[in-house]
Length: 102
Image (tube, rainbow, N blue to C red):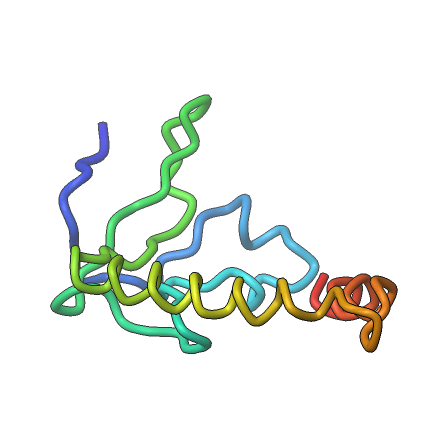
């Protein structure tokens, strides 16, 4: 059984993630306000496959401050994004930018 307590070992990658075509797409750091950031005090916690109990990866342990900052940044980004659906910027522009991301 794995612990849900944070650790400082973010670089473990399980067998499932190693089988990905590009395992570098999986990140351990948290993402907020356009930046990849370390976990709260450099801590990480494991992501567990409940079917096999295999440890798949570690992800950043984010605290209240990091969560508040990410939520505030997301709110600002959403307000900007919402403004792109006017007569000057057709919806296909938003669509093509999402296609680029994914």
